[in-house]
Length: 341
Image (tube, rainbow, N blue to C red; front, side, top):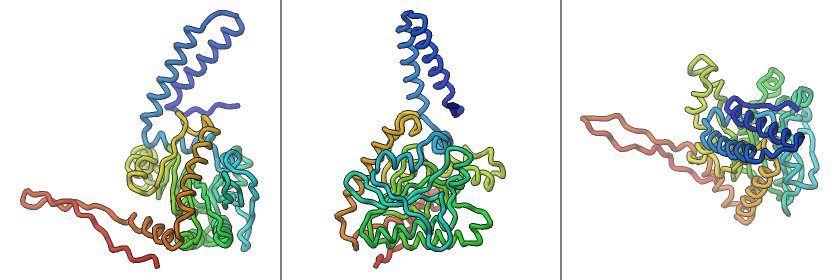
């Protein structure tokens, strides 16, 4: 199987190859190379820690897009049982870029909905590279409303570069489909959790992301625009993507500080693609912990809290210009939040 290596991972890959060669030589030639092997192992561990504890925003985005990174169905196989996939939006077609259905996580029956990418060309074409059409969002809403009817919590897995921008999607009103989801998810009468597991691109991510709790994996990102798109607009050159990534504040750490997400889920050293099982175990614990917190909340309180959660995201700070040598204090621009009811 071909090994995919990011540029900043190359020193690690070289050490891993050296370590493998030493072990093979020791085994084949029946010689003691334990001292050399131990030295390389220690150097490898130190190099991993040095690289992966000091990642730049652009490097984290590269990890979020890693072709070996686990997708929604990879997690579902590890954290859920009794999965029954449900198809179609009952209006036009079944969009394979969004997968949804009933499943059991722990002891809880839930409705899972998520964006799914492909591993090879054939699967990517079927999944439309994880970019949903309007019918995908309408299917997602149908399943959410079904969950509401039977008082089943909703778990959404976000992993998309964005909604599909093609002519067919525009003809079938992609913007309207996403807008309706935003409105209806805000008043959905059942607990909901969104987990950003990879890419969280623009309205395509937000279309299934208006939930009571928003969790994000350590190396995932959530943004109104891709770094490349931002760079093309601001600098007229996509080569400035790394600079745009830093300016956009779209990494998990930044989003937590800005209160856009509620919790950062740690990944194994090197990224989720290095250990599917460990990542899935941590993810499952986080989902169940947050579900337990939401389940006993009175529905009217849940809706009010959800409303206020998104309402306060419009709050910002502004520094007034200096006058007569004195700097005015920062002013917090706020609007009185009307009641959700």
